[in-house]
Length: 408
Image (cartoon, rainbow, N blue to C red; front, side, top):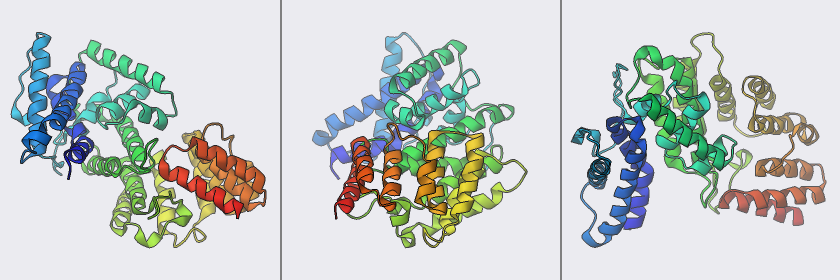
């Protein structure tokens, strides 16, 4: 593996853990220092490793360089903070099953998620700050997931940092009694982190599996921890595991994005499906019906269906109807319209579609329904619009295929 590819891999897999570990030692007001120090370590690796060779333990090397850089930055600001080697585990650590939230979590990233989802911030700020600081998403990626503009997200992040610093918030897991107020923000952040991995907002690749893997891991840790376990956390873990099972079929061998109906279901990950249903069964305890339960049910209906035609589309329409009442969004409206088209035919689906505006998926769905109704010229215009708005290379290739099919 080339140095560039190795560093890229470490940046994806280790950055958030290193930032989390360092930030817990520095305090919330110094998260920027933690981020800068880790970025400095990655740049140093790119500069030095091609000439000096890759160290035996690359992650440990990054941890040491980042720690030293953080100390230098603090000295420059005339600050003193005690740091020890425990702040930087050389290898990624998995959460233990018997940990306790007594101002301490044995998973740095999960601890940091709860720490930054502080009640000093609004719910929107909590999720935004968690996605940037812990989940490792960029400002444009966060903006895409939250259906916002990058400038607004950047401003929200600045305000969040200032509010946490002004409040003197420490990077530490809250006591047990403070968890319920923060848990929903943590679940939302993990859901959005997963979504960016499952359907990237830009770039050459449609999927970024590292985001999905980490989101599933943290969601399961949340569901298994004795303090945060509960129906909502299990429902989230079920949703993510059942959806992640489809990752191997998201893009075909030819590099074209594959919609659900095109995916070979025999290639779905059966282990993840079984894991998802185990969490789904546990989520049935209690009487609360959350957005995570509704989304997990939709994922489960796809998982059990032997084909697109055999899918219980009417039930999916009904669940989306419930979801639009408790968590309305353009994404839910679009997904519901697609389900209506499957259940009641393309004319019904077309009538239910929201205005596509700048959404490539909305134009693509409209094109599919119009093509099914024999309205090829109209369908072509929407596929061309979807092609122009497509965010990743596999999506563009899919729209090009749709246009080619219309031309035959």
